[in-house]
Length: 409
Ligand code: MN
Ligand code: MN
Figure (tube, protein in one colour):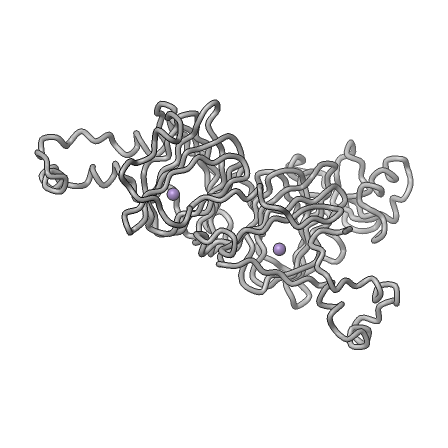
């Protein structure tokens, strides 16, 4: 089984062979109703009640590999299971530690801004990292030294606003934008940010007048914050028309072209890594954008610094997580899902579909780091490795001193 790809097994089983050799998830054809029975004589049928669509989406939950064992926390949550807040300028939904309990140090928000739609000027305690998924947006901010920032971002671009830095986002033409926001605390709440209109609403008019050096009577008609937050506005003109004349720009940009980076490339995929070494503003979030071709595998590895928070952009895959003490669990993912790997746990991600699998790995850290199982064994005295695993000479000679994040390489 190890040498046969899942798709080959599926093809063979559809053709009428191999049922006994394959796991049930692989052996059952897409037209059959999947049953919780990984092989004849194990498990049984599920007469119901059942949610067949979810069972089909989670073949490795319904029929876990026989190597899975023990109890792990839930390591997947889909944005499709998140409440959608709808406003005049677009919508938003979030996955925080309230939705995905293990996710204590990162929270994510998925937001759509229609053309001209504005995410109201605001700030929050957490740092904000973002990846543009669709369309284009204009982002603005200032820093504590009174310098300003403005830029237009498109698909594959990032931004990073440190905690406490005020900012805005606006969808541009022709169809606005959709993006992923990542915050460096699992307790973040997109509905509890410091909103410009909220502060005006909760400050006496005479204080506002004194603050801005004008008459108090000029205030008192601020729209209710519930009317703003994500609101409709005209599409702005070109970027040049929105520059602030006579002001200093920030010395270190808050945006970055991640997709334009030259990737690490193997035969089976690409990896682009962005952290404070190539995007200096991003001091608390490090990220990797991974693409795995059908049949490819993000190799067995782990991270020596912190938890991994994942967002699946395209395709479908499964992740196996090894939690020590004989515990291992496999989860399935598709576009719009969030995955999680607790600190230091070993894992792999396999493309189980017929199209490229693309996802983001994110870390609450200034730097990206991973350890490769393959490289570890290659850089350890062979006799010592053999004394542990009794590996065949073919395996020993296949070990790679160079890291190959996506295999086959
Ligand atoms: Mn924000
Ligand atoms: Mn990883």
